[in-house]
Image (cartoon, rainbow, N blue to C red; front, side):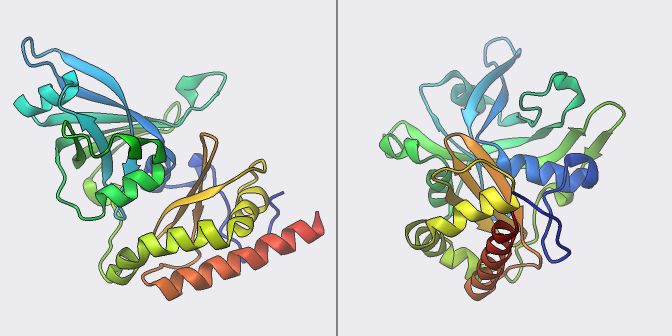
Length: 255
């Protein structure tokens, strides 16, 4: 399992991260979130559960139907919030991390939205092309992060999103990288999970990467692994994956 090595970007707890870093990690790891919209006829807040993904810069992405009440609400007023709950199975959920992102939910024009969402939520491929479904993004305006008792911080979009300037090559190669890693290096992905992230074994798969790190999932369990350096190209990503595979094998041999 995970060991200590100065060359490894360690899996840090939320308490060890800055509020912005903890929020970005929480958003990247999430498979679902609570969406709050304003009910059209009364103006009351309406909360619903949605599946979630993030674009390369961290912008939340979701797929919703025009038949759903939350979508009808957004058609009248785009103001919305997303609650990301990182408390897991904590004995006292209020001692855990969570963040509310506030902004405007709009149909996304991002060319990577479909790819990023379906890589994360593969089950949605069965209905993603139905005429009543569309991909949305939440354009963040501010956020309210709670990292446990006494750790409450307001955040700006700059705290939530990753600067992708210079990463156009990585974005263009994203689908190929994800496919290649899952098809040809499934063993390495499982090693990342078990030896570096300290997760149980299983059919782990890569769902997305960005300049700061990459996300993996297995049977509804997620892990976020940081890169040691900023990744902007496919070659940068390959070098990091190779390096981390060597680190993971080294840890396994010492176990």
